[in-house]
Length: 68
Image 1 (cartoon, rainbow, N blue to C red):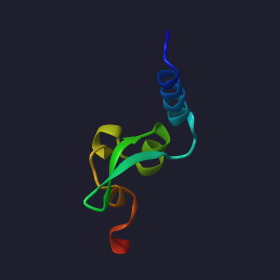
Image 2 (image 1 turned 60 degrees about the vertical axis):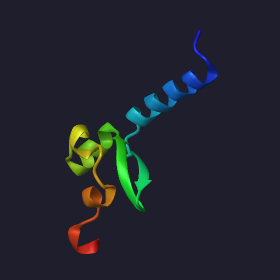
Image 3 (image 1 turned 180 degrees about the horizontal axis):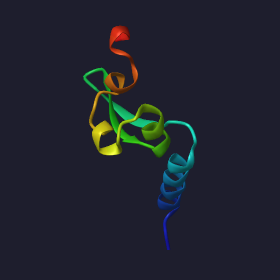
Image 4 (image 1 turned 90 degrees about the horizontal axis):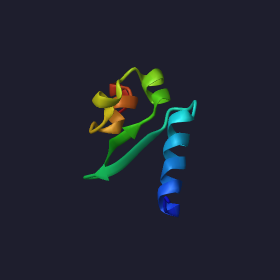
């Protein structure tokens, strides 16, 4: 039997993948957001594949160079 935490994590993962909006999980490294995970909508909107996006600074992926 799964624990409550495990069930919650499973529900979160399912929601994360099924949303039609681009969603990014990130953490700050030296005051810069770095991508931990993206959903399929992010891939569709921004054109990066998941493997390329993960580990990259978020601002470099979504903010045009002239605005960084």
